[in-house]
Length: 239
Ligand code: DC
Image (cartoon, rainbow, N blue to C red; front, side, top):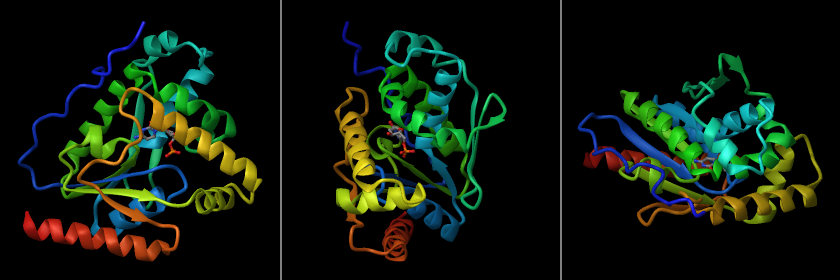
């Protein structure tokens, strides 16, 4: 049976609160996390890593023996884990049922399974709800990084950035983060995960029509941060 693509509820009406919302989307290895944390720290904003939330729910499914090949089983369990994200850009945290999972959510096992779990509409609806509450509670501003923030989670975001980079640059960065892991293997895994994330029915990885695309292949982190901070400055001046 086909799952309706409407499982993620529509975004709430825009708030009148002064918080500035910045959506940073793009595939893995484009510098989303480093950029988003640095921008949030510079501006005194909160920071939310939505990939960590999808990894956390995947970790919980694995730990509780839920079959990753069974979307109905995943859907039935989607409401169970209590996922809490700490949004200080200098020290972001993630817990599941009170347990710090910041390290175990980065294992190859979770990385290999996260696309299947995050494709389940009930999982997306649950996590999207948590993300919108966190964004609504940010009093000054928040930088939210992910795959569907500008398109689905916060379609009314003040600033939308879509980061890209060549597969070679992305694999080199990711392999560096993993302590020099095999480059060809890392590239293959990245391309496979992007295809799964871009091809799913419910809120796939996609650039919002009104997002600014930044190709980070030839840019330093500081250069990317400067661009995003400048865009936020322009929007704030116009608000
Ligand atoms: O950013 P990351 O590599 O930690 O993300 C892990 C996975 O989570 C990614 O492969 C797809 C999924 N994800 C998603 O579906 N939607 C988001 N907003 C963020 C991540």
